Image (cartoon, rainbow, N blue to C red):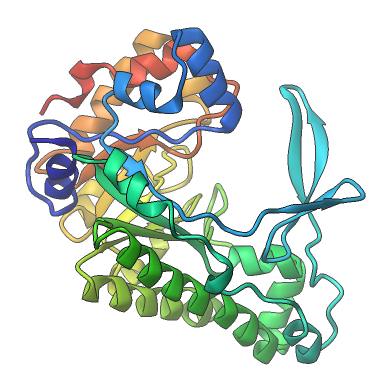
Length: 345
């Protein structure tokens, strides 16, 4: 099998020749991997680790920086903060944090797909020949919440539903049109569209069932209908303890669940595979909280093999970290995660 055939077999719950792999990491980790491995590009890193997935993206309007505050086209804002690993951009209150009415939200200069440059997509697809192509990053509740302020949007969901409905519609309608335009530009080569919004804390869900039905499962079902009509699979990303939400995610049309954080309550791989493995595929599962940063390379290799054999039995699994690998993970542990032995079925 080539990489694309391998991924498609796995997400269709068929046994591939080996477990397919993906790699998510913070920008600083990619830089360190290049340096430590003596490589020049991220693509060389992917090839070394035999990564089967490639992500494509059009060029969106550039972020602006004013007075030390960075803002993207949606009105998300960041300021630089000092961490033990250096300076990072951290979220601050978004552009609509002070909105008092629906009119205030409507007045924001919302982006349209006419502002997006899709001309680079064909070349990205050409370079990804033989690999599975993923596209998306469509955050339809948490990102609106970062623009509005997470506390604000949760209050709005109770008392200002018209404001949340309008805000979310701007995002969902954009993502759907963006999908269609990228699909056309790619020559209909997208294999997986991924949407996201974080539903879980380390212990459980952070929203009630009524809010999730209206603002998570309903728009997710709408996007699932769109992408399935085009023959594309839907992957949903949510951090945290989301076991309780998995039946509703399946009912909403989700084909693949990411990122499977095993340290969160109820997210142990064996139970997930047993209870949901026939109805949904998995992407992720290799712990970035404790395993990758704190254990030895041998322990990482052993645990990766254990998880891979549980989730990959009979197909239905793409091996990947349980979120972006952080700077606290040593390079030798990343290498250990992608040892060939762990991917044999």
